[in-house]
Length: 384
Image 1 (tube, rainbow, N blue to C red):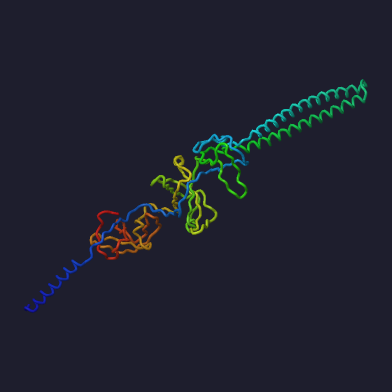
Image 2: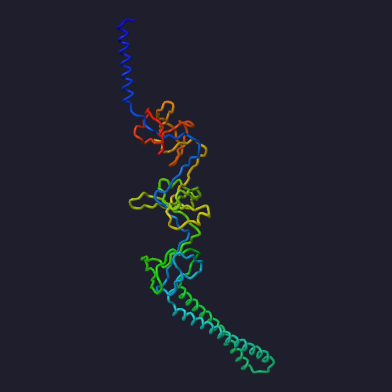
């Protein structure tokens, strides 16, 4: 080998060394990536409400008297627990009470008059029967017998008329009691008093046709609750009664409640500037949960449409376009784009049908700048 060749070799090595140094000092810094392994587990396909749902009582009555008047009795306060049949409110009704007493007395008088009339009719009938027997023997005249028989029939008619007057009097008693009942609000079921609109001696009026006024008493049955939530019309067609659901309430943080779909509204709500939705009702399956609830809580529901147990899965946040992921190769410290076939998914996990293997590491923070096929990467020191 002559000196010329040696020089060229030295120059080539110098250029290569310089290139290595330039690449080393100018190459981009490796990006930090957060990874999760492909694992086995359960994946569910779910739908959730588009806007906040509401906890509602199975029974809720907004009660008002059917007539206007001045409040004379108000034996309840907001928050009280009442039993069915308890008096909630009573209007001034002394005139109706007096009228009810009057017609009750008239009914008693009618019953007494009827008893007297019927007793006279019985006596007259026995006398007429005795004279009819004597007339057969010729002991009494025919005229006297006819007069006795006629008088017995007349007194029997008086008896029947008196009985009819009893019915009329009892009907008047019923009318008086009905008028009196219109001045009283009675609890139709066990519940809690949610709201009272009115105070003693205030005047209340019933709602005229077509004009809603606040109810005098708002009564809530706190022994039964359900959740109603709006579901997008696109997802509602897959929901069926009896499907399993999970309920979350803002008031209880991360705690979940088990439930079942009990009803799907037979119509679509079309509200201005909002998506078209279908109201879905979810009932709670654990009776113990109901005791802790209050009507009006905001709620979210997640309805389970399909379940795949013990399947390969990856975090949904790692998936791009429903079919792409970035796989981290620990030995080479690079990330590679991978096409895979996905199955069902939810906000947390996506099912892997093919294209990925158990324990392979997929990049989760795919929105980080620099994440691309072939990029140099290192594992982040701390997960976000």
